[in-house]
Image (cartoon, rainbow, N blue to C red; front, side):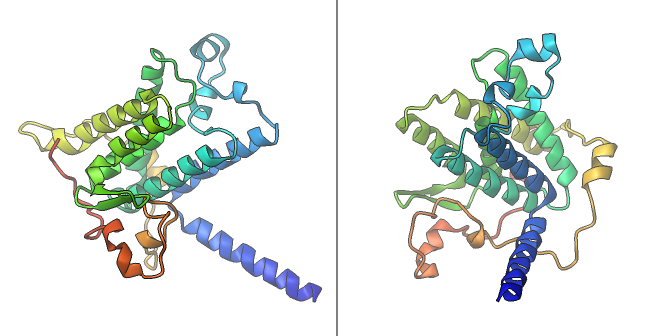
Amino acid sequence: MRIAKIKTNKMAYQTFQQEYMQIPVVTRLYTTACVFTTAAVQLDVVNPFQLYFNPDLIFKHGQVWRLVTNFLFFGTFGFNFLFNMIFTYRYCRMLEEGSFRARSADFVLMFLFGGFLMTIIALFVNLVFLGQAFTIMLVYVWSRRNLYVRMNFFGLMNFQAPFLPWVLLGFSLLLGNSVVVDLMGIAVGHIYYFLEDVFPQQPGGFRILKTPQFIQTIFDRREEPEYEPMPEAERPGGFDFGQPRDNPGQQADAEPAEPERNEHEHND
């Protein structure tokens, strides 16, 4: 009996490990760091006061880790943490498996660019944790590159993907939260989208954001021949996760009307 239980546990672990390693590398690293940071706070291993963005402590006392950790903490375990992590994982993965497929180094550059801009903005506004703004940036870039995807928000409304960041902003208002975080994410996401997708297509335009060779060496690897991205309907989260799934055909309006588009849209 004990041997059978050990074998079952071993098989479960191997299945989990296989599924975990199927997650694209950047998404895997970022979401894992977020979960471990929150777990460390929950277990009192670290204190949120050691993580938040504080320019004085960063530049005058050399606590440079705060430049990173303020993007990794979404609050203690609860609804807010779960909501943010679902969106972060979902849209981070869809970007990396979609328009950034086989271009993880370029995805890392987007992380660095977005994080840098948000850090500069945070010097002038009263924000101490930027993880939620970073998630909105990911959502914004994905929505602009998937103009024809139809979304469903908790079964209450249907809309096209480009409206998604604004729906989230309205949801924040309904919950009584500050919209500064959402506006920052939208603004930074739009700047990246314009520089990467719009400006290079204009007469005389060119790519401003070029990924350094050392980042390409680290993150760009040949894709496994048998690797296939997880079908979108099987990914956790999304705007139809509150609806019954007895008949998959009934959820067609919550799924993309066509496969995710890898080519960039050029309308600003």
